[in-house]
Amino acid sequence: MKKSPILFNIIICMVLIICCTGCKNNDNDNQPEVAVYYISDDGVKLAAEQYENKNTEGEKLLNELLGRLTTAGENPKHMSAIPNGISVKGYSIVDGIAKIDFDESYYDLNAKKELLCRAAVVLTLIQMKDVDYVLFTVNNQPCKGKDGKYLNAMRESDFVSDIGSKKAKTTSDFILYYANESGTLLKECELKDISYGNKTKEEYIINQLIKGPEKEGYYRTIPPKIKVLSVVTANNICYVDFDENFLTEQSQVEAKIVIYSIVNSLSELDEVHRVQLSVRGETSVEYGNITLAHPFIRNLDIIETK
Image (tube, rainbow, N blue to C red; front, side, top):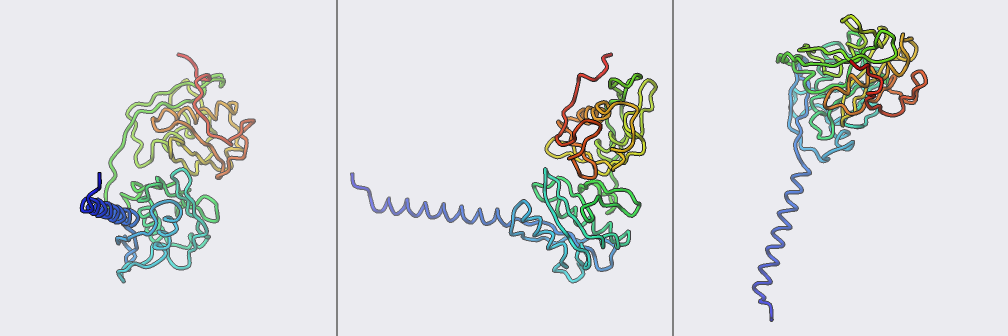
């Protein structure tokens, strides 16, 4: 049967229309808009401008947005979030954590400018679909705030109170694991309706383990001089970074009790399936005779039965 040339032409036109429409949609998908945050010229608040980015994800988009953050906005009253004289030495995205490494001039910022710079960078980069947290380092070392404390990996909610809104009070139940009296097993400690304030649940857990148990019959696992530099969860892995005291301070219990006190406590959170421990970012170290090279899963065999 001979095909109608009119029908053939109609089919061709329909195909061309579909193809053109598809191309147009793809172009739009590749050119979404991101709110880039700047610092007002009076240096007291943040201001945002919509920016049509060329890249859609990954380190290419991260590089593109960092370029915008080091440039003044279209509005002449919008100053760059990262001031002139401060260099970004490197950047990466690993497991949802965008790491931005600055040179030492970052510490020259006064307290107000440092907070505004940090907030603008985080609020801009956290919009990336493959970024859950933003972590600052200086010369590849953990970054300290003006109060001398190490800055944890940051999210949008970390800056809510700093830009004018109040954070909601947050409470939850926790299960922590401390040592038993003999120090040979872990003992489950239930905490009910605990307020963890503006910290994450993961931060609260680590800080409580370092602080030590408040109930009788439970014993410390982590020496009190140890400091946590960062604790974040991404892709169901909780990353906990300690200072060098983690390797030098002696615990009263054996190494595996310390490790699994941390791992089992964090694994009680629904979103945590594994725990990766590190010391100043290094995992190629050993704690006692236990390597930190790989993430740990919970160990039920060393929990004291009731």
